[in-house]
Length: 421
Ligand SMILES: *Cc1c(COP(=O)(O)O)cnc(C)c1O
Image (cartoon, rainbow, N blue to C red; front, side, top):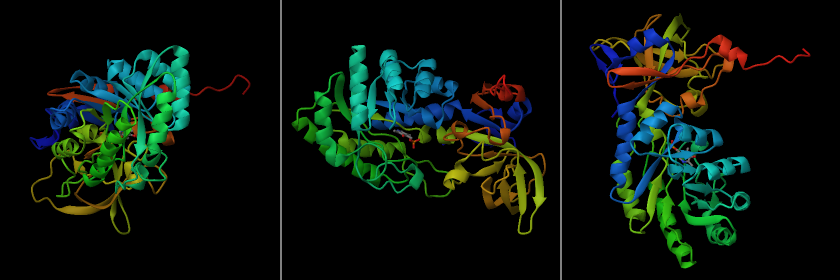
């Protein structure tokens, strides 16, 4: 369920017509719905209740401060993977004790920043990281609460670039070596071992891989407790997929996911954390673009848009599908024709869709890429010196620009020409 629907023949975000936003900010732009963001957060907390839990939004999926504040205000924690994301969480008003630090390559500077600023826990991914964190925390006279990310060796059955829980992936420590590594962690100064962390991948469309991983985590909880560790928190990661198409292959709902969590780890007396990104932000955002030209091709017509792969890289990078719909509602039964939908960048990879059936479109018409909230704006770049597209947040009948489109001057001013040149 999202809040991008046609009203009076025109696509709206909640109660705001996307065409009204376009006339004020120009195209392309990202637009997010407050109601969808908070609803998705609430679905997770309802699904995990009454277990003690914290839903930590994975900032990497959508990191605009206004979005983070929207979620923080309804009680969300945050999962960060860099100093920059930590700073964003803090700037959005999230208290340190609701921020979890993940990531396979945390630097000592990042550890220091989070220890001083306050942190709920570090999810440690390797033995060298364990030793570094122990040194940094000890040198500050502080104690770092930690979980250790285990790699449960399950196949997430998702795109290889976003699968993270198989033997051979760079993430976590092999679950088979967990006892050894936990024993070392318990011996090191400056660390408080509080739990276990697991995250097996993104855009999972079935509960089975989660269930297999969580059962292994439950076993490990018993083993580590028997070894004398006070395991009291389980971070179960993110990764629940979203429907990118409107057919009947919808991924499991948060409610079913929650029931599975209770079934697998609910009776361990642990506080549960999850780190959903995509499921909260994905369907809460659209990318709106305009048709620059309709070009007649040999096989099919091309729709050449003013958005490109630098604005939304998922189709080029993951072969991802996004539904693309006209902003002006097509008449019922309107004739369709197949288009190749492309951006203006000089790479064949700058193709959003091939032979996509669309109602007939003309120069100047606008389209919306659905499900573009997650891994959209955050993965954009200025490739081809195309300024980053603006972001807009809608709430009810009003909207605000939450990141302005940089002017060409602003974009160029970040470069410097050395004096000697
Ligand atoms: C990417 C990531 C997430 C979020 O994944 P989604 O698929 O967006 O839910 C959560 N935790 C970690 C450690 C991640 O790397």
